[in-house]
Length: 304
Image 1 (cartoon, helix red, strand yellow):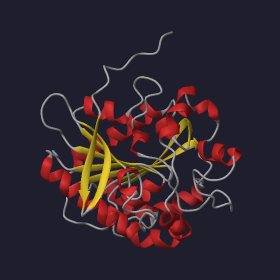
Image 2 (cartoon, helix red, strand yellow):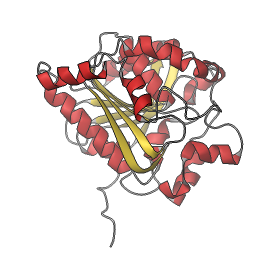
Image 3 (spheres, rainbow, N blue to C red):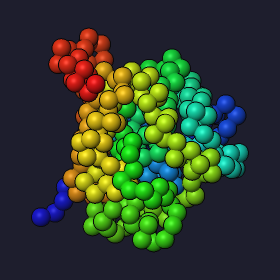
C-alpha cells in the first residue's frame, strides 16, 4: 500500500532576526492564503540547528510544511550560539541570556510580520529549556502555549554526556534505535549536527537546580512528549511527577510518542508528533479566552 503524499512542499526561506545586536538565523514558512492564525516558534535541541524541524527525508515530515499548510506561520530559529550567531557568540550563552536574546529576536519578528493570535513554542530537548525560560521571563508578548519533546528532569543514567559528542555508540544513544528513522535522515542530519556551545554544555548539570524556579513562573499550557525509545531522560511515573509538579501552568499534559527515538522530528513519527503538537495549539486557541474549568483546576491540584 502506498503511503499518502502530502501537499506540495511549502516554500521555506532563510530569515535573520536582530537579537539585540546578535544575528539570529532561522527558517520561515508562511501560509499561502492570508495572514497567519498564529506563529509557531520552533527551537531545536543541543548540537542541532533550525533545520531539525524541516525534515526532508520523506514528504510530509516537515513541521514548516505542515504548520504553514494549516494556516500558521512557522519560524524555526537557530538558538543563540548556533547558525549565524555562532561567530558573535563563540561560546554560546547561558540559559537566562538565551531567553533575553530570543525575546529580542521575536520582538524584531513581530515588528516585521503578522503574528495572528501570538506565539506558540514547539521545542526539542535543550530547546525546551529555552522555551520554559522564555515563558518564565514574561516580556509582554502573547504566548499561547508550549509543546516540548525530549526533555525531562532526571537523566536516564549517570553518563551526563551531551548530544553530538562522544563515540559512534554514544551518538546512537542520543537517537535511539535506527529503525525509527528513514535512512535519508542520517544524510540530512549531517548539515544539522554541530558542536554544543561551551556555556550551554557547562550549564547542563545545573538543570535540576534551575528548573523548579523556572517552572513556577510558567503560566501557559504545557504539553510534554517522550519518545517510546527515549534514552536521554527518565520518564517513568516518579520522574514525570517530579517534572510536572513544579509547573504553575493551567494545563500540563504528558504524552508518549510510539515508534520514535529522541530526535522525533527527524524520524518516521515526525508527522504524527507535529500533528499532535498543532492539535494542542488548536486546543490552546479554543480555550484562550475561557476561564479554567473545574476539571482543569482539579488536574493542576492533583499534580501537587
